Length: 285
Image (cartoon, one colour):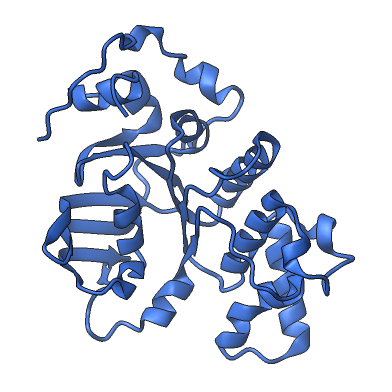
């Protein structure tokens, strides 16, 4: 396991804000018993050409919950996130060994339709990426690609997706306006609505609030907390307070390895691994 070198003047674990202070009145799911697994990786290794980026990652992600990936820049958390819907396939020379299972089915099996996979496992990126189209056409794009042509059905899908993304009331009177005219926070919620329009089971989010102001970040966090009632959400974040606020479980990555995973409350207050404690107390990162 990698050795971490503490920075001078590091803080003690006892001096960190308590988990209760961070989450305030928002509490993770407390459903009794373990939740069923939605996605599981077994012995996953990933390579960019000759460089190995992930080492023997075995991880179970529960359904209808939020799991946060934390760790310093370059630790492999975004690479791992992109393996969960084969987004890394577009990188020339990339390859993997091991398994990535969605409800027990290996998503890298030869018979898997990647387009159909990405409908079930949607993705929201760090930078909002609305298409240079109307608000309506941005949301309707995915269903249209899937073959939906009925205008009434498309209208219903668009309205439902915007409502679930908490954006409907703000844009319902300007559906034909350019999505590029929206604010940054609105654009990111539009991208979430666009992902929801294909009726996914899983939402992958790669630092979705890192470029947003505090008010917009709070709205996105509230939205994530609401969406977990119906979706499995996996979020990469550099913000440990954000991870504490919105996630049910947290996985800590370092140098391409999964160091520790557990319920967020326990991982932040009683980490089992010295490397995890060093990171969350600011000794490095």
